[in-house]
Image 1 (cartoon, rainbow, N blue to C red):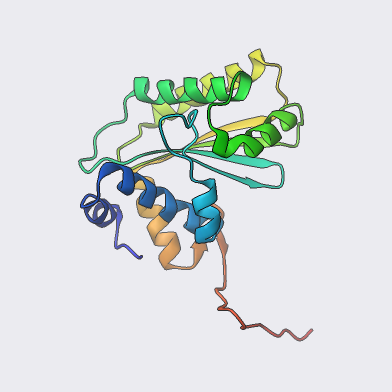
Image 2 (image 1 turned 60 degrees about the horizontal axis):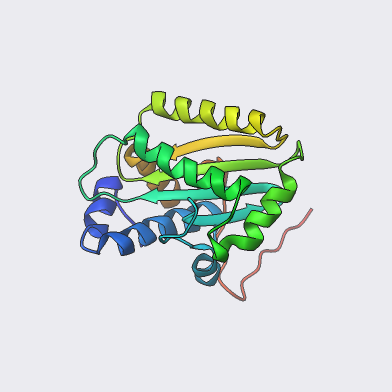
Length: 198
C-alpha cells in the first residue's frame, strides 16, 4: 500500500485496532527497508506480552536489527520512560532469560556475536509519534554504556524513525530507493530478467 505522507499513513492505520495498526506499521517499514516477503515478516514479527522488547527482528550477515514499534493515532512526543522501559526488557532478553521463544534462534545468534567487532546491533524505534533528537542521543549513550559494561565488542546503534522520518521513508519508497541506504532498486516481477552487455 502506498501513502502520500506520514499523516495519511497514520489516518489509514488508525481505523484498525492498536495491535493491528502497530503490526501494519512494522510491516510497511520492514518491507520497505529489507524487502522481506510476507512469509518472512509473519515469522519475524513477534510483538506480544512476552516479546522481551523485540517486536520484529531481522538479520543481514552480522548485522542484527531489533524493532520496537509504537503506533499512535494522535502523534505526540515520545516519552523517555517509555523508551527506557522497552530498552530494559531488551537488555534483559540479551543478557539473561529470553522470554521471546519466537525469536530464540535470532537472540542466540546475537548472543554468540556480541564479542565480534565486525557485528552490529541496530535497535530501531519505529513510531508515528515525534522522537526528539536529544532523546535519541540519550538512548544511544545508554546503549553504549550497556555495551561497555558487558564488555561487548559488537557495535550498537539506536535509530528512531518517527513521524518525520516516515515521511522520508514514504518518499524513498515512491522513488524506488531503499530507506536509509541511498540505494535504488529495480523491481523485477517473477520470470523477468535483465540482460547486460559489456
